[in-house]
Image 1: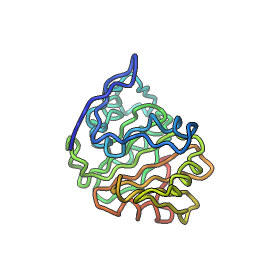
Image 2: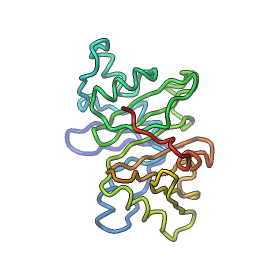
Image 3: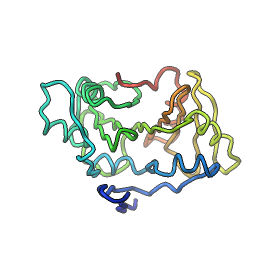
Length: 217
């Protein structure tokens, strides 16, 4: 697994990527919307290394100190379910997940207001594990997310497929290029959700399951 560093631009910190995703363009317009999206297999490294403290603004309940909040929103704290909710709500973030898992803790990374990740830590362990060994749910602000995701699913490329799930959301996946991820364009929103699961096929199962994808609120 190759890890490389890329710099986004002036004034922004370096971000570490694992096997960066190539840009896909359905058209010039849609390509521009998604060009800045982080690669699907980059998530684990981002959760550990992303250095974006300058983006974090903490307004959550007073029982969290500022130092704790900065660490927690940078993916450096194994959070309980209630801590995760408090941070997301306090920061005013839009974050989707697959609901709680018995015995798990969670790592949250807010790269910016439009790009947030929740990593599941079964048994509360694995916070600094650099491998792509844990389920991660990414939330990306994407204009016309439903239509873009639906169009992706109609691409006549090797491994591409798509469907509308029981919740009415568009789902796209590619068993060749990104076999561990599924993308869900939420209906009537400007958010696309990426589900990454180290178990092949499980991300698609999660994307298909009625009511599983939900917003933390």
